[in-house]
Length: 101
Image 1 (cartoon, helix red, strand yellow):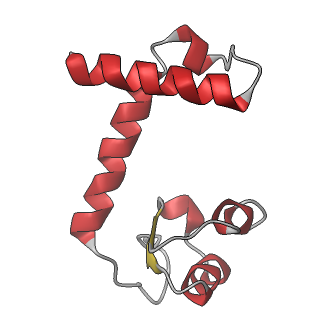
Image 2: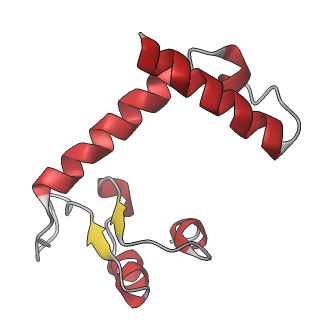
């Protein structure tokens, strides 16, 4: 849970969608303590399988496919821009190019 809690800390969230690598009781409790829903499938070897919204979990695939396409732009993949403002601006431009395809 070393990085999972840091990712959700300080930002308003309603739903946290993650893969099986984040399946732990501590992560789920940290998410639910923020008042959010944890959409994380359980590992196959877990004795107690946790229920999750399968339709929402499919949205994770859409996000991953978007980032795969966005990283085709070298400036996004290598974080060429030095400032966060310029990097975000180039992500917006890459997003527009992806939408236009």
